[in-house]
Length: 320
Image (tube, rainbow, N blue to C red; front, side, top):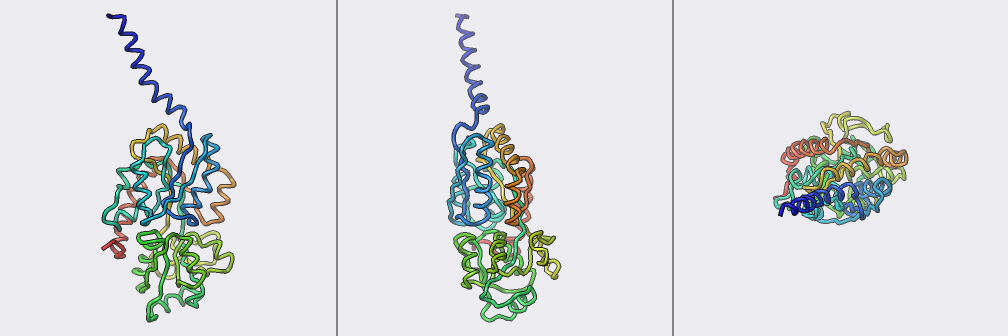
């Protein structure tokens, strides 16, 4: 019966070779980027800016899917449970990976254990902007009004536990002011409410176009350095408020995704980020490009998770 051994060995070799061949040929079907927020915010803008160039790099369509709900937790949890085949990845960002684990009591995912980070894409300074409701045009006027207003002023966010929510709560605690949180279903709705005068203030990274159109007045930025596209707008630190806070975005795959597939995704996105038209579009939106390896992004997520947990505790933004 020894003549069966070569046959068995051949079968075993074929079985071992099949996954390797599959990895080498990946992708053979469309790749889906799940954005766990509604259209119109930076998460959506980043994903859609990259979808076409990444598609060209991979040789397959890249489809962006918006699945908003519960501060990004629902869709992020769904991707955590998806097949780890590389065909479904998620926009993992400061809210879902760094803030939500400390805000929500019953998350369906773990930001560290349930994902394989692919690449950090951005670092985004946020802007404190006001619309027509408050009648102020400088940071000093805003602080004076916030400290004296009765009833208190209000501010928008894209939802409980969002990056904008924590940023404003952080700002409140450092500035010694009070303000009422008005959550909206995404940054686009929050921005519209600001422009229309429905709400007084908004800290976000998507305000540049509205500022250029004269619909929003920028008062300060949350980063430690001024924003290139707003050279006359001071940092909060320049005004004596100890705030240094930037949002960020990246792509993550479900835990257990083959490292070779993760590397292919990383390379495709990294190459897309080098393209001049992508860089110009991000620059116009006040979006800084990062890049890097999957390992670097994994370390970054762990560090941000720890840092933001402290901010959530200090700000009182956690779910009660």
